[in-house]
Image (cartoon, one colour):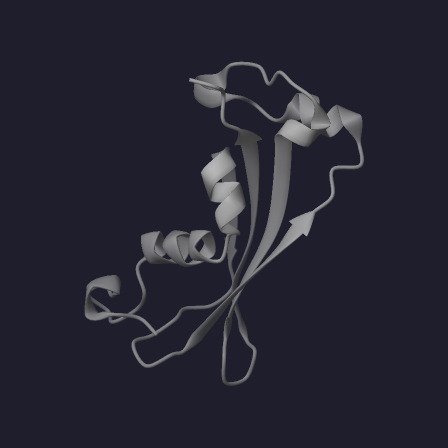
Length: 115
């Protein structure tokens, strides 16, 4: 459920809040071992103060080896590594009551380099 700080002047949830909700549903092991490379969100409807939101995430298989080479590294550097070093996820934010879609998204993650 949105907090007061999540709302803009029109009492709608701020776009940055949606990003936080998407990332909250990521598996902790991915957060610990990978870096977020890209995030794409497609907004479908507004979310308001009294709405209760479900944040759903599912892994997306990388079947095409060319897809790995298209994922860009930090600061635009080319991606290096095996397919196992990259993970992709699909995201859905929806209203708990009627299941209406608030937004859909996709994230791409790269395994953290050993520092």
